[in-house]
Length: 393
Image (cartoon, rainbow, N blue to C red):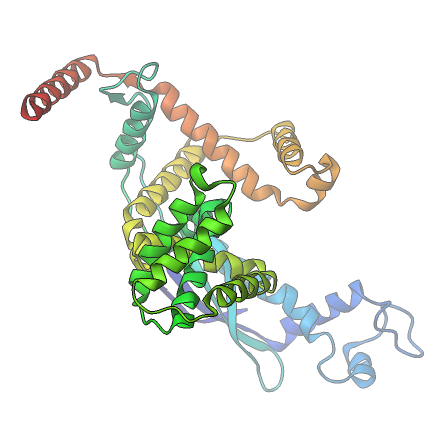
């Protein structure tokens, strides 16, 4: 293996690797030995055929794909070990080229895990009591431990965390009946305006759909919501345009078409539509929504780096029994058999999470209350409340 080019920029590694003919042929032969039943050669016992025999029987590119499955990760892992590098996520192999005369050349791109230097993380003092102000206590301890740590937060880690936050929010929206109703209102109201020949800006339609959704979903109209919904649509549209004589029939068709369209949506399409309705209710684009959560994502990444560093520093381990119990808990929540869960769940992310949980517990359990600081903070808050009450009166 030879490294043709290696570049690290913004914690992103790009390395071009050349595997020569001899090494690649050895990988092809190893692949053949694992699959002799799939590559029989007439006149040769299984495992005794040479690469030349195999090429004559199956063509010059025989076992190339199988060899690449080991050559690419094997050579890249060697690069990481020799450079003392740690990556996060899956590396991406690109620009693969077979070299004339034998061998292969390819580029691998991967996000590097940043190095951090721990400051004080045990025995941190904060102006709160955990028994009385648990949330404030824990937030203050974690924030202080992060502030004591030195290191950079790579942009790609913040983006990945934003992706995770966005994905979770989409799940939350998908599980909220309110946004299912809102998405329906948006489509139906917009189509109703078009049916009457009225032209309304989408921003106004979104606001009206939000108001209509809240009224339709209220307990007051719970039993007759469909008729209430129809009457409200009629009233809204009539404000801006005379209604055609068959307007009620058109609304009925719009509702039926909406049900048919939803039935034809994939789960992903439905989720995106609901999330778009949710963003519209906030009058935000997805990028604006993500920008608002940039700071939260950076804080979450900082906490992840802190907990990973503490777990490494304290040599925190997770036992096989703990992993087994965790998987059993997951299986119970998902209505799966523990054996099925054990066979299908990747244990590495679970171990990572459990190590982080233990590191967090270690930090929090060692923290103490700064009594003087608490007294001063309580007095400051009391004065602020008195001032606010005086201004209100």
